[in-house]
Length: 507
Image (cartoon, rainbow, N blue to C red):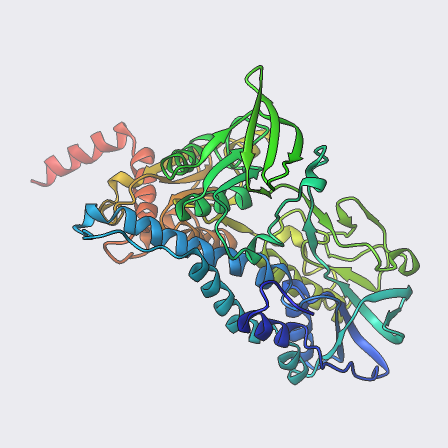
């Protein structure tokens, strides 16, 4: 297997996650657990199961590490970090930086750095490492042949339990001419070695926004096309608006409420996109098109019918215990769950371990997806992080909420860092300090949301966060200020009057 470009870093990556010289072991009797798919969910499931003494087989047809390592979190955050550095140089005058001549910019070096770091991190997900953990690693396509058997290149693996962790892949909308014109997805964009002068991005979700901003900062002329009226449709309007304005300042041209009619590839290789917006027809030319919408579950070729595992267009069907319609077989990760995050896949792997290897009454029924508190973050600048409910979610469930918002322009560290655009917001169950959900927009939002997540998981309220001492100055001071808002809101005029009389008596 070769990756593009065929350089030392990609060769090192392949040597770790799909080694050409790898020889599959002889199946070792009946496995306690066979794991199909070596992305995050599969790797965690296999490693933990082997670590507690189970006999485990791990099957991967493509690249171990899955999307996160190869075409997702790792390479994208490498690009995001480089783009942030480029933007910081451009804004250096605010911090007293001046450059006597033109600043040299090398997109090829950015991509080389990403590939180098990805290859370095791939050792953790390597076939050799997992074999060293006691896992039988099989490289090749796996297909269920019965309710308790799986075939890998002619070898039959028998199992007591199995876990389907094959993830999902990028999918493109059915736009006439798009396939013929050619397009990039997160699975191919990281193979670029030259910066596209003009880049069209279809879809303003997290993937589209992160990469649109990054490529605009690198110097591409970026056009972002979205079918609704704003970016990041999952997030609060004002949170999305802050990111949208920053992207606009970074040079991203955004078109909303747009319906793409067709795509055509010109003889010179340019792509012509025709779309309708604002009651008129428009055209935009691009050298590359990046599609950032749509995911399709990897169910093809797995033999799920033979295994008695039900699935549909959204993936494998599971119950709250991540058990499929075949009670021997479980699933975890993007193949079965609406929250398609690496950390969610990791958490689900822990549930599979407990429920698959420690059956009822010891395990099944204890670990459930209902207990998960899953945060997420979009790594634009500023970042947008969220956990739990939005206010609209609570209202739909008939829950009365109190919402408190602290802007970062009143947080000293954010002002000093020049990152005062944004806010921290919590939603509480009315009359209590129980946190139902939170949104943070700003620098380090992805790190800050963890403090709220821990509080929610532990059943601690906003008052507990406010009672903790936070180092000064940090952006996390915003959370303490939210707790102060709660105390002030609950302190009535009557209480103040009574205390004033008491203090006057004490004089």
